Image (cartoon, rainbow, N blue to C red; front, side, top):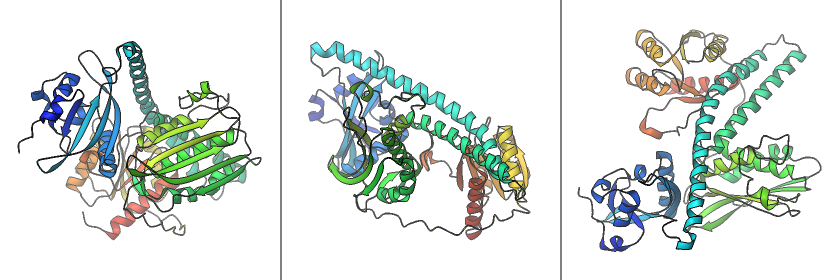
Length: 498
């Protein structure tokens, strides 16, 4: 199929324009786009548009989804150009050529379109933006490494403490000490997740949900955050709508904003939601407000910076995590505040039109932990403490556990031995958990596989790779691992086919 040439109309425009197929392949470009990207038309047409525009897979998919819903979307990128990286603003909208649906990307160089007297200041601002982006990317790399190692170590603390509390012979003093250990490990894990959220990293599990229902589910938790001297009001007003979001991360956004409002020292904290129209489409808006001391302009400019806090006993990651999460969910956030007049934080997420909310999840009565006697389980993780902990958690339920120190050993054992369940770490030397999963699906499609990781950027279903039967985030408690394994075995028993 031939690609349509750039039309005369776009050739004459002074801004860069690229026309992309829905799969991202460049179908047409104009001379301004060639100049902007520093490549001839012949080199650009037929190439991967998202890669040329410095858009990762996840970000490109989010933009394409936004265009499909609202007709347009925009993004800021740093283009790699012959003279060095430069900030460019992208406007993405629907297009149609030869009767085929396509996407049109308008790439605007903010420096090139500034008046001459503003060029020096614009370039200085662009350099600041580039430096900020580089700091963020560096922080993300550091955060990823910290999260992986730190969460591996916390598995032994959280899982072992939670499993130890099951001993009916424990005294109440010992049981309470174990509860405190669990709580401390949970808070340490939360700090790591907040750092990853700010850096735009960590695993996203996007689902369609009714955000007002989610607010109702955490009403009591939010009320407990607000101190006794202040009143708390929750007023969901959006009605029945659907957004695409990671429910755990959206909960974190609301909880962090309410905690911040409570710290303002006012007499009331209010949480409300409503529908608004913007960009030719409906959006869900969350507003968290307080009547506290307000925020001065200097503090307001830095309020989303990591590790910045006006309170000496705080780590300064709460609001920066909110900012990172909202950005990853395809929304935006703003704050309106003046000294002495309280503050209002507004979070907006695009609504998925014409979709019914999912049915409520049935809460089943808690049953005793079933035994796993006779079940042979392969556990693979390159961290010895994690292997030992998972092995003990499974053996306490009667399972027979075989361990592997890396992906290559796991694959060898899968070829030579018989197992009824496999539990794999994602990041292992030699072969990753997803590599071992692919082998298991190809050779033993009925074998249930659980993946676990303290840090992965993969979104469910991303990359075209096989998906596990369950995914467990490190650090996890004994109860979380038990629940994941029990659900996997229950589903496989009900549907034994590949």
